[in-house]
Amino acid sequence: VIHITDGQRAELAAAVDAWQPGFLDQIEDRWSLAIICETSEDRIKWAVTSPEAAQDLERPQDGTIASAGLPMGDVRRGRWKPTLDAARLLARAGCRRRVRVASELVQPFLYGRRLDNPKLLGSTGEWSDGDTVLIEAPNGDMLGLAKLVIPHEVRVTRLEPVHDLGWYLREGG
Amino acid sequence: MVEALRIAPTPSLRAWADAKGYSSELVARWASFYPHIVELVKALERPPPRYIRLNPLAGDPQMTLNRLAQKGFEYEATAIDGGYLLHNEPFAVGATEEYLLGLYHIQDLSSQLAVVALEPQPHERVLDLAAAPGGKTIQIAQAMKNTGVIRAFDIDPTRSKAMRSNLGRCGVTNTIVHVAPGQDAARFEAWADRILLDAPCTGEGVIQRDPRRKRGSLTEYESCAKDQRELMDAAVKALKPGGVLVYSTCTLAPEENELQVQDALESHNLKLEPLPDPLAERAVGPQPLLAGLTRISQHELDPQIQLTRHALPHLNNCLGFYLARFRKGANE
Image (cartoon, rainbow over all chains, first blue to last red; front, side, top):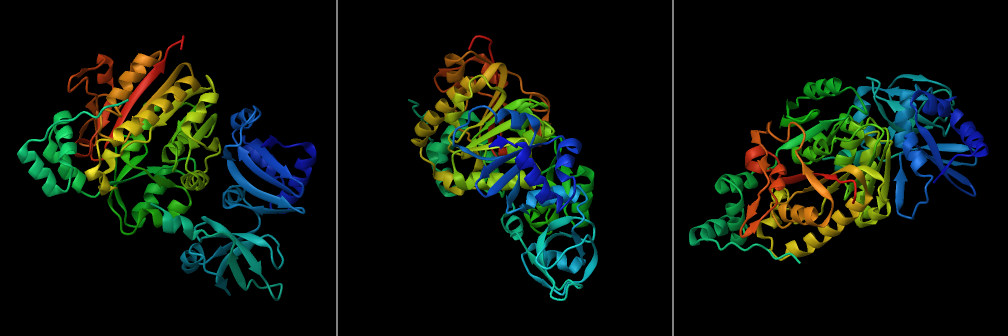
């Protein structure tokens, strides 16, 4: 786990800006969080932490660290796959890629059901077939991420949950 | 080497314990250590009360309460800020959208006490040993307002994974999770301002959740006590001079509680401190916490140990728990 270099930051920023322009600056400036990453040949795995935790990670570490801060996901070939934790931060940042679903679709979505021809209450941003978007409840709660399948480019016809959100609800408590 | 304290059960107590499905040796010990043994066993036979803790890191606590009330949940504030006792669950409190959003987590009152005793402050360095599934880690992060750094250790990879999920759900950003035994924390020499050592134990206090403990063997104390002593040694090494160490267990066995504390006082430059409000004097649940025992069988213990506290199911309406708060001296 290391602090991010300028080159990695530029690559990361380009991928993240596709979701929410200026998101990295917002993380650092608005929420006073630090960005850390772990890199391999073809990917950047990144997370956000308190500045003190990031500083503490500069000391020599052993191999027992399983995670640090909130995991934000991986960037591969210029594309970012946000985690559910990242989706929560994106929602707080007012992410433009959002779809608001009707109340009767909230529970099916949370329990992992694919939504075919869903009743939508609204949407923001631009997307194309295969993109991932934030899914919101009617009251604005961020429910998770879904892949959009748009056969005719205009109408959203299918939302496929990206994460198994139901895990929390099945295991919770 | 810890030798279990053996108290011979009277014939009537043996018959009564057998009828209830308990080891009579276990009940005889409790009867000699704690008040109102009949009430204690009755409380152990009831389902455990359900407590939640609101999470200000994820949302406004009042809004969370309003949302739960709208769904038919009934609750009551506890003596611990942010902690609530549930009176009515129209459906499982772990299966709500609010839970998914991290607006609260489920945590017994007893385990909330440990973090109140620790008093973590913003921008500090905190070690949380044997941390999974992370309820107390989340509570520490709340007290620190997500600043500073927490290093959370747990040896179990499965439980550590659950902890990482819980931390993420609740929006905790200041924590580094180690999948390692707490003993490994010794290499962070004089690093921590505060340490929570919620030691693995025989779990006599959580019989309401795990009834197998009713017939627990007295021989289990020895192996638990050995681990507890090693963890205590590691914690003292990792603690800064002047730092605070909270030792806790969920057992009723003095071999793992007062006698461990006595051993720590004799082996290290540690002093016990009174627990902060409301743990020292005020009611937590129906009654105040019980002071630590200073005489156990033939053992006369350090009088400081009366500053430690027991939470007991029949006195405090929570799982059984033990708490001791140490301050490390300058010369350790």
